[in-house]
Length: 421
Ligand code: BJ8
Image (tube, rainbow, N blue to C red; front, top):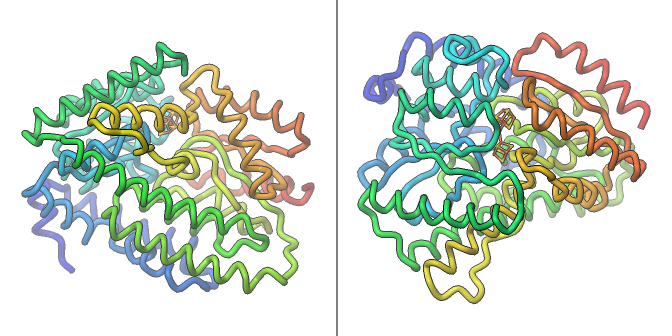
């Protein structure tokens, strides 16, 4: 389908966009299409990526007649409230190296690639998702993001949620206020009243998405795993911008196929080592680490990061909630209790999560990956290394960006790590 007219209406730089789109198929082919495919329900997710700047963007453009399209950079932004305001939430975190040089024209080079690529995507006018949003909701997590919102606010309408640094009672109170404030802000800004029923509906829709993802990830506890780590990562990544109902249905169908496949594989011996990946988020099209691990003789069986278990761990409770305020409180609780971001100090919950995931997914080794200049995750690696050592779980720490210059070095280190497990 020719999207030129839509791109023009979104003020896309067509020439630069063509260059960007030329690079994606090569990577996609290498990481996904070249491998032997066994799960038929993956074809939906592959088709979403193949048409990443097409059909879904058109749906979002069409949605604007009914409600706002809102962008975010963090899984702390509650999708339930955006849905209750008739909005659609899209994750704008950018994972392509293409955008980094554009970002570096505006922000310092020694920022993480996720921020630089995000700024570059907007600055270069080559990402239709950035171009389609009516509002960007930022959050005060790491310092890099906090200051980058000031730069974004010259290019796009912004609302910023403050974040506590500690998961104390005071921290929880601050966050509860922030969640309420967001709700009030969206009501006013888009003249949509958020009621108990609309909020409940939003919660149920996001909980259903989480249930489907949990069901899919549970199948990865089997040995052999019925789905490769890179495919599971791709599925989770798509959840950040796909239509929520369609996505949930497709994840459920895939989970069912994986359950069936797991029972048919159960009698087979599995000699592959099982890896937990943890650290900074991995957003489309950042598939590098999974690709290297899984072409080095191991399986990634779970990801403890924001493009993994943190995205769907536990639901927002609707029990005993009879008012809109109750629901908002339950939303605050679910987010603060389940998302163990390294921006919090201390961040004991993450240590506990990693250990219990290692047990549940029968993990042989941990691959800890920080994006370059992602200070919080780089520093926290030391705590996780200690905890892993105390529990006799081998761990390797890697630092990488979106370029492919370090592929050889990564492969050498990962192969040696897997061999020694
Ligand atoms: S809850 S991990 S999505 S903040 S990679 S920009 S931390 S320097 S993305 Fe994150 Fe929310 Fe936390 Fe998750 Fe900063 Fe690190 Fe860059 Fe990061």
